[in-house]
Image 1 (cartoon, helix red, strand yellow):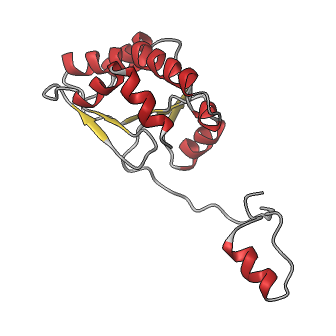
Image 2 (cartoon, rainbow, N blue to C red; image 1 turned 120 degrees about the vertical axis):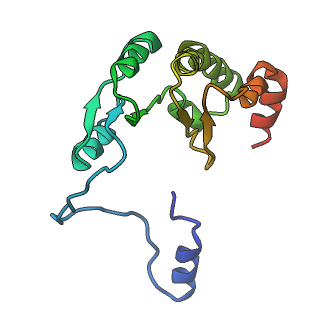
Length: 165
């Protein structure tokens, strides 16, 4: 369905050509040997990220059961170590229109992971960069006031914002 109404298919049909109805990726190819240069460890439940970590020659571990466990790991790292933490709890909810469920899970994620990690980061002068997959980047250090997260507390406003999309 992705290609059904795409402009490429429309142009192909107008030119009397068959439309594209599927994409098949295959072939042996050759992977380029990459070096991470920046990332020391990827922490995720996603097997694709496990493969990417191996490809860029950096460490990989599964997401621990709690933010406290992960914070303990962070505190054991050398200064300037770059760790990527992938929390995927909200990914599958994006495809559904139940904003209330998404907001509830977002609040759980914030309370269970984000706020505790930011507290640990503040206390121990660890810089945190958050990539919420919306094309933006939020950086937090012990000097930031976390103004972005105040919006979450005003649930009605956030729900209106999310419902607008």
